[in-house]
Length: 282
Image 1 (cartoon, rainbow, N blue to C red):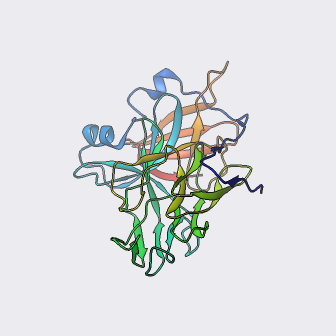
Image 2 (image 1 turned 45 degrees about the vertical axis):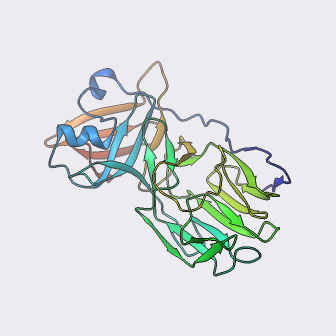
Image 3 (image 1 turned 90 degrees about the vertical axis):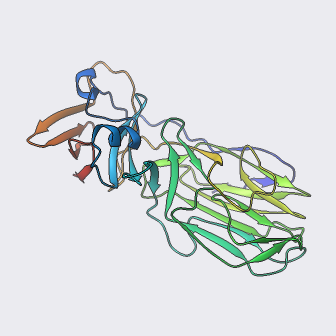
């Protein structure tokens, strides 16, 4: 993996060449079968429970976890890598910010299905440890996703993005911010893993657009653009870009109270309830 330095607010484009796999949804199959959002599922099937659903916005076919289905439905990407050193953001204590390292770990990411951006400030499926005093004045106990920060004058803040096992990748630039901000974003060739190091006095690195003092996370920070890997390789998730083709690459059939979505090439079949909830992937 190549390491790309940030001595100034330079931009790293985390892009990956498109892969040849695509899918096409026949018009007769898409109508009334594939919802665009969890809210639409709820409107059509008020008793639909929380769970994994197959959605389509007309441009992509993708699975999400639908949460809060009895109140205000929201979409999330379920992370498969959730160890102590995976999918976390850290404000490293020291220098002008004394205390203990603040590390926030994530198990799911809030996704806007219309824009395919992650709200990095949504902590519904996150947990934090540590506490520090930012510049000796503000108490920090949590961090948004994909941010590495410190106030030591050096890039000792840490962050890890690990989308392996999912069907999505990062499609976003990263840049530094703050006083004397510097850092690196080390991106894997498939754009599914990114190691972040950032700092300054105080400084950070994060997905663009860069926000000022990106601690105290709260919903409403749509800062990380994702894209489909366009490969049928995840054991539990699907994300394919839909493209015109001479013959359909996806076929939807009905089997009793279930919908079967057959994906070609790859031979994968998603077994859905009539509400679009994924019963199995085989």
